[in-house]
Length: 163
Image (cartoon, rainbow, N blue to C red):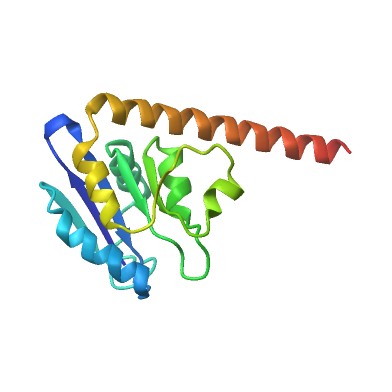
């Protein structure tokens, strides 16, 4: 498993990238795009397996990375378009970039503010061209949407329990 945090000093653009070791066509495309981004400076944390006690970042360190990051590419899971990376990003106010597989995220989370791409090379253009103001606006939009989603979900569950 590899985690890459990439940060650009100009306009405080930053991106957090991850790789969980699953090899398939989309993940290969993702890794190729990551290598082509060439955003500096960057921090790389490479692990050999999931939950690698010796090499994994602490929760506190991961949280700091997310809080200091603007974009979080969230590659699809091995069996499902969703991955936990989306929720980590949203919880920390980071903009998730997701693969738009069968419009999954629009169907599952209507009116979501995620950046949806078909191929990972589309992410580079977004990261390179978005202005500081556009990034801040999207971060706020994601933060507000996520908090409303959590509140709505909490209220839904509360109502179901009440019967």
